[in-house]
Length: 115
Length: 114
Image (cartoon, rainbow over all chains, first blue to last red; front, side):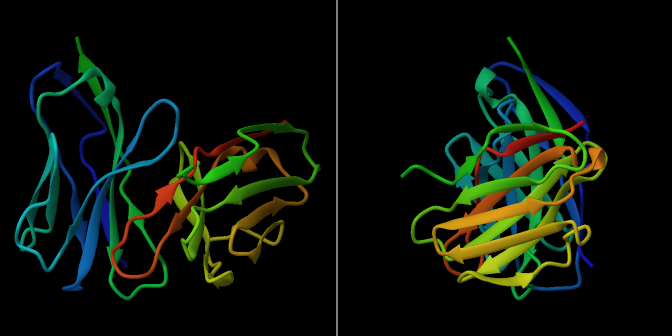
């Protein structure tokens, strides 16, 4: 079974600075998908970014980018120019290509943005 | 696009009562998911529908939980009878197509069972 590990329960960053959230996963599969979701205090889950394992190029969405290291099974999220609105719980998630059982989530990292 | 709609947003009930949570997926999405989130267990997938058919319900905790999707635009998650340990935030999510497309989550229903 796949597992997703987020080893940083809490992180903080100064406004306008850059922060990196780490995520590692365990799988024997070669084709899969990885996601970062954001959960602000409103509790809604919001997709931040996704990455296909077969793509070597790291995904980027505006201030959000990932560092995908397939051999190391690592999928970190970098937030540049952090804003107060980025404060949230961030979840890393894995989905195998052919699995009927969908997303496997990590335990989350609570990000605080300091003004 | 209104996104995934869930109702109610908050529900407080007494132990033993029946609880029904509702979800309207994004129009055109053919997969629907019910999750439960608690501090102790994190996010857990309860059940997954594809084209209105339940595909994987292995996450449903016990027979007190049931889910239906009578059509492409509506799903319910029912708990009967409810227990205090069912207190959690319940999320509905939908997705278009297959492959690696992302799931889009609703705002969640915060359930408190007294």
